[in-house]
Image: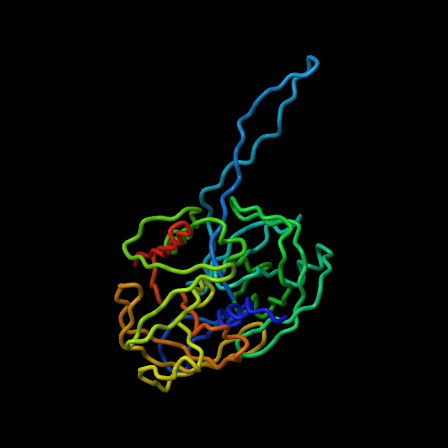
Length: 325
C-alpha cells in the first residue's frame, strides 16, 4: 500500500520528499530548495533514577550512572529553516539528524542502512509529483537529546542530492513519529532546541494525528487545510487548491529539487490570511502540481517563512503552536 507519509517530505525541501524550493528566478523569497510527509515533537522520557547502594552477602553493588536528562541542545541551521542536530543511529555516533515535522515515518540515508547491515521490504514513497522506490527497515534505536525510541520502523532513501544542496551530510530525517513524543521549542536566533513548550507572543491551535500536524488557514472566506512542515521553506499549495480561491497571479516561477529530481513551481499572492484569529497578512505562495494519491485530503504545506519566527514552539499537550517574531 502506498505511503502517504512521503507526501510532505516530497514537497518540502529539495531533500527528502516534499517540495523544496530554490530561489525563484524573478525575485521574491530568499528561501532555498530542499526536503517533505508529517507530524511533530519529541518525548522526554528518560527518568533519572536515584543512585543507591545495595548490599548482598557483604558485597556492595554500585548501579550504573543514570543518564542525565537533557532539556536542551544546540542545532545547526541551513538555508535559514532546516534544523540539523547531532545524534545516534543504532551504534553510529555523531550522525546528522534533520528535524522535520512534515515527515512520518522517519527516514535514514542508504549509506546508514548499509553500515548497519539492515534488511527490509520494498515500498513506494508517494511524493507529490511522482512515486519513488524505497525500502522499510527497523532501526534498533535512535538517540536525539532525551528521545530514545527503540525498534523504530524507518524508510531508506538516497539523501545525496539533499546533502549536495546543503553542503553537509544528512544521515537521517527525523519526523513526527519521534518528535511527536514531547513538546519542544526551536529558537532560530540562539540555534537551540528546548524539549518543552514555551509561552510565545502569538499562538494558534493545531490538530495532530498519528502522522501529521495540520492547521486551517483562512483566506477569502475559505479554509485551507495545511500540513505544518518545518522542512519546507514557505507556504506551498497544490494546484488543485486554487479552485474557487481568490489570489493574485504573478510571473514568478522557479525550480527546486527533492529526492525525485527537479520540481517546478509558480508563485501567487494571497492578499488576506488568518490563522485561528491571528492576522497573518498577505502571503507569497508556491504552487506545485501534485498527484491525487499524494494530496491525501490536504491543500498544501505551511513552512517556516510563513511564521517569520525567532522562536517556534510546539505544545502537544494543549495542541498549540506558538511563535515570536
